[in-house]
Image (cartoon, rainbow, N blue to C red; front, side, top):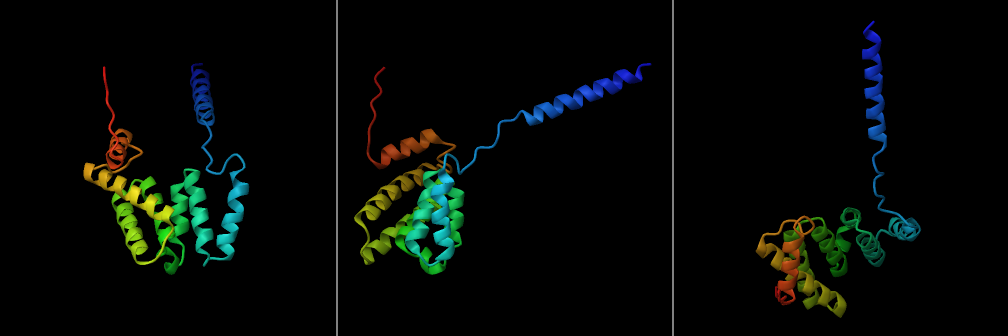
Amino acid sequence: MQDWRWVSAGVALLTLCWLGASARTPAILIVADGAGAKLAPLEARVGSHPGDARALARLADAYLERSAPGLAKAALDRAPPRLRDLPHVTDARARALSSLGNPRLALELERSVLARCSETPCSPTLVGHAAQRAEWLEELVRMGVRDPVRQPRLAMLAYRRSVREVALDVR
């Protein structure tokens, strides 16, 4: 007579487990709020014209703006080697790597961007942003920050030191 109680307890337990598993919040989509319509032409352009450096840089920028540095890095890694050596593509790769928590490699890439831009003419905007990012990455590396996302206070301190900003806390 006690068997039906064990069976009903087992069924109730399985039901609770199923409800608990199905009640999880859905995963956050990278491409949301109509972003797919904006990314699709860029992805199609890079797919149909793999040698177009501007399209590749625009696609990487779009991924980085949508907080998808992994997708940006993957797109840049698949690019032909001659494109990877261009300053604006290397800069996008450095930004992706710094967002992925690899400031040392990102710093090396930013330095290579600055070195290439000293040899060949580059956009002043690219040079300025690369120089500022290189200073910030130098501070991150100097302070031993491995991942700016997981260590936001140290990352902010490194940023303030790189732009020489001083905060006065009067309590």
